[in-house]
Each structure stands twice: as structure tokens, then as C-alpha cells.
Amino acid sequence: MLITILLPTYNYANYIEKCIQSILEQTYKDYELLVLDDGSIDNTTEIVERIKDKRIHYLKNPANLGIVETLNLGIKLAKGKYIARMDADDIMVGNRLQMQVDFLDQNPQFGIVGSWYKIMDSNGRIISEMKNYTDPDYLRLGLMFTNHFAHPTVMMRTKLVKKLLYDKNFLHCEDHELWTRFSEISKVTNLPFFFLNVRSHSQSTCNLNQKELKTSVIKLLSKELNKKGICHTPKELMLHASICFGSSKKLVGQKEVENDLRQWFEKIFSSSYLKKNFSQYMLDTFKVNIMKNAGLETEQE
Image (cartoon, rainbow, N blue to C red):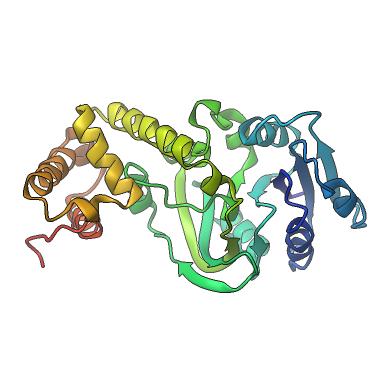
């Protein structure tokens, strides 16, 4: 068995059947599908159990344990060489499984591989698309600033993730935190293909837990800066977080804040850690892009 697909779910009876069908329609067939029900109180059990396929294994937690414990349970049970993530309200598209398996087979230095994705509304209508970066060094650097992987697009090497596991101290950004640790022991990338349609709706985990998510992300950003020896004040951390959350553009125009942002960028990109671990060309290129995304003009413009 080459792949274990981890599909956690909690009260997503309205969406899970279409999600599972999209997996079953993949051309690649050598997998086990672990449907990890985190204590749903809707009719998820009935829906999953009426789908007759011997590759599907339905496990239900006796109570709601949360996404991190549920995923870690799935990782410990996984028998596949690779683990593919999927969310119960999303749709798998394209030839995802085959192409990601082929990539990891042919590139043993990579620990995870994600993909581009499209965003759909609650009714399944495509409303936008996201083309995440693909360059491994760019992604390794970019994880200091924000998450460049869509969690349910990722396929991971099982032997690595069984050692790493998800960290419950970073709830709601547990994936971002895991990718940072993956990037320290292996290369990471996204394939430039659309392999997922992500459903945006009011009951999604991200939308329901915005406050907790932001608190966890700020804690993660601080941890990553500390690991890289970049000292930061609470004010600088909030500036850094504004870049991550995409809110820095709202601050630009306030002269004092704009100056603070520029000084923060100079501090980051002059750090000895970055200069030691990345080429100057990569740092210069990334700096221009990240400043532009933050709403700041650069000398190159």
C-alpha cells in the first residue's frame, strides 16, 4: 500500500460524500482512506458507511478530541509510504495522487509536496484561485512570514511525519508549524497544478476560530524568529504578524508605521542566519516581493 489518505471530519455530513467521491474518482488506486470522525453528532456515520469500498476505513472518536489529536492518531495508524491530506468539505481534482506519488518517488530529497488550488463557495462555484510558490528555497524562506501550503493539498513522507507529528501547542496553524519543521530536514515544494477545490463557507474551522488562529500564528512567528536569532520587540512582532495576515497594506500611508515596517524588513534581511542560509539573489528577490505585498514601494520599482 503506497498511500494513506487522512480525511478528518467533524459535522460535515453536507459535504463529505462529494469529497469521498472525488477521491474515488482519482486514477491512482493504491491507497487506504482513513476517515477520522472527531465525534460528529450529525449523520456522517450513515453517509460514510453506505459508500462501499474496501479501501475506506471509518474511525470515530468517542468524543471531540480536536484536529491535532485526530490527525496524529491517523498518522500513527497510517500504513502507506506516503500520507496525503484531505479535508471533508473540499474536492480533489486533476491527477493529484499519481502526480504527487511520482514526484516523491523521483525526488527523495523532498519531504512534502503540495499544489495550487481553487476556492469555491458553499455551493461549489469557483470564485478564485491560488498559485502558491514552487521554489524550495523561496518556500523555506517564505514560511518565516506566512503559510505557503494549503493543508489538504499536501502529500508527506510517512517515515518523516511519524517522527514529527503535529504540535497541539499551535492549534489552527498546526500545519504551518509542521511545514517549518519539515523544511529544516527536507526540501519542500508545490506542484504547479490545481489539485484541489477548497470550499469557503461560514462554518469552516478557520472562519469559526479566527481569534485562536491569530494567537497561535503570532506565537509560531515568534518561535521561528527566535530560532533564526532574529530578536524582536512586541511591536516588531505585531508588524511581522500584519505581513502574515495581509493587513500591513492598511497601515501603509501612516508615515511612522511605514518607517517601522521598512526598518523591520532591513533587520530581518540583514540577519546573519538568512545571509548564511540563502543566496543574496534569493534574499533580494524575496525582499522585493514581500515588501510589495506589504504595500511598500522598493528602490527597484
